[in-house]
Length: 573
Image (cartoon, rainbow, N blue to C red; front, side, top):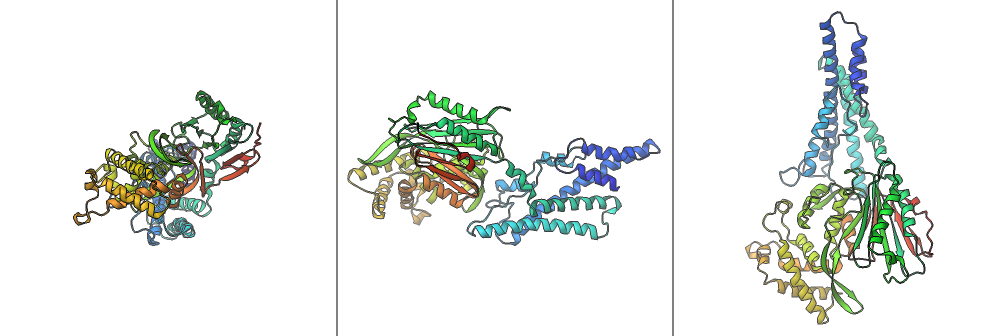
């Protein structure tokens, strides 16, 4: 019996190769003498039953271990709602996954089968959304407590199985005991010693990038520098890569590349990017006569963790397709309105877990579904979490664009519930009505600046808000969205306009990224750019490495997840 259990236990370890499970059943059966065919058949059935019972007890012990994490979280009173419920009585997107401990039914079925290996990808866990506002130190101690609670419970379960009399009978109790100690040992290795995280840290995504000041003498070997940086960064994971830049005309050039088995990702990526640049006729981009202040390049190499290593899942990411918008800029000659192409790109190293919507921490999948409705995306949202980061930056970067400012202003002041937004119920600001509101605001602002109006002070913003509110008051479609307080209105038209004006004035790319990170849960090394901001790139880091180096003589700035990637010679020729 002990030999059978020992072999079955080793064969049930995650990642054990086939035919180890079959051999664990066959070897004891072959080594034992059998007096008759009936006895041999019964011995084989007993071996299969023992291996199956071990798998059942392993799954039960694992489930109890994960439930210990949930119970500890509940006892700490950090969250009034169950981790298995979303808003109201409907399960959230993370709830359904937690019920199966984030392992598919098909994979659980494979775990139960006694003659197949335990899949290495079957790593049961529960995702407990964090509760904001308690501070990073409190969050860290909370996470440690939750991990230790699972390990302690599994240890107590194994001790109880060892000390108490065999309550399952002489055949099943040794199997139950083995399963309990296997889970307790695994809990000690992962939750206490953190051994399970090493494999995840071996392969990581990586950012790299460069900004070149264009008004200095000579040119910079952009292709060579990007190639060297991509090659070093790819040591973190090189299943795919990408580069993007914004051209002086406000358009973007993006190249994403998935290398073949033995090809050089850095060479293939940069060569493809430079071919696209040459096709756009931008050989003059770094020449002396180019009058723009700078050019920048955002790069990324990826080891696929949240989705497959395909071109569509590779960075740099954008959420929406390019669109032409009207943007106001203030220059030496005053306010000027132009029609320009709008695209937002993001490279992200880390994990985007949750972002608050309507007072509830939402998973990135829930955020993606909500953004799809708010940003009016026609196609499907890709699975990569970083795509949703790009969508949030796109939503929040509104400066100078009335269409975007009023879209965000409505979400800030009068948006219906999360479920209503997804289902398309009443109370939504339709695209046609949004364009009408933006057109009215644009017309009012044109008259405002023509008469010498300014928006540098609070009084100026208040005056402009009043004028736009008066202009929108005649819009019939807004009457149902902003009814008077005496007929049940919860927010006023004035609040909507004031938020929109503030968005128009203040929400540049830097503010958008800062707002996102202030509320987001996860780890982030981010670089982002927008085609409306041709001389701006924003870089941020929280929980992920990001270093920046400056070369005043060459007029360049290099950044990236790997500091070694910036150890490249940069000269002007």
